[in-house]
Image: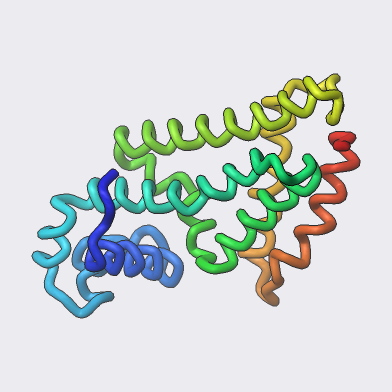
Length: 195
């Protein structure tokens, strides 16, 4: 995807803010335009349809999460530190913009359009594959338990991250994701017998 203009980024942030404040049902081109104080036509000049705006939003989320997955392959760190950098990086992204959790973990908005659902499935598969390769490499080096398939280790890791973020997001008192990171990392290290 080509780089977004400043105005397109503004519209995407308005969409994220709108979803966070009022839910997916209020995510319309008209409401996005109102959020930034412009007319509907201004949004359509940058995004020909709501589908294109949602597609750009999905790619924007992917761009923010990809560097976190890349931390799994930082060769200067041992396996435990790489997993720690990955998890704390994911948590940091969601703390910077809590509405991302609504967008990433509530796929309902992307089910409206077949093309968006396919794109979400592609992104999800790529991320699971990347994490699976990380665990497969650890297993080859005998630095992780080998009695569980790498893909299952990846699914347990991502499921645990998702549940933790969702719990924090719905907690009325609010919590700091970073407070949960070290305990979660220690638990996964023990569970997976990481070395």
